Length: 171
Length: 216
Image (cartoon, rainbow over the protein chains, first blue to last red):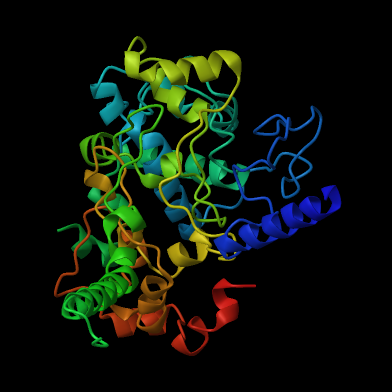
């Protein structure tokens, strides 16, 4: 009797488990832990380890190209502009809603600062600014730095700085 | 003794009505129940630990989708913002708001916030955000007017017929790559046609409805 009821229970479980058409399978999805798992989530990487695709040594600044600047502009507008503003004057939307005012990129101190400083601030944060290392990849940090440099250069640019064949686009 | 008693007509009529009624109920069960919002959870906003408003953050503040969903361009999963991403602003703004208490608790205890999934796919479907982004499918194509949702609700059924409707004819659902994350984008007369974009992105419908495209 015991044997029979056990067989019945097992076959019933198997039959009923098939009812969800394999919508739930024993595979790991992002943000999903196996049932009953006690693992820490999200997994924090052990110290002194780096991600698989992370460069072994810190990247130096890449050569500045138009593609790099365009990438930098795109990433800047996503991650920096909410506070620093699209022009880098520090008057972004989040600042208008009460976040402490960040310094303008156009101060003499930041114009003369080494590019490494901007890279390090993105990586580690500064003051009330959080680290963006989890959001902005190392290569993108240099792209953003290049774009900040372009913003700084554009502040006191004149028409004379624009190549003659591109001037008509300004109008 | 008659074969059919005086009540035979009544039995017959009840049986006929029952058969007709069952047929109607069966047809409703097959064709109507599966597409009811109650069943698909379409337009349903599940309760979340924090009543996060995309409308406020996207349309009100103009924050890009990728500010929080950081892996949407590179990975199958769009990525849910870590507590640190919320705290980038909320360590300074609305620091005492009662509705952000779960956020502060999460930071203090180093435990993630458990959001309720709005868009659930069965495990046999392998959906990848990054390829849809790379081929010019905008967020709102599947997530509806997400930038105007005060609470996040499910905009589509996620039925296979819905997936296939686009995989068989993607052209009307494509947009220029720089408009993919624009929550209020509309096709204008100057927008390149869907066919042009399909050619530009090298989209071939011949392979798009293969079983192995989504099921492995």
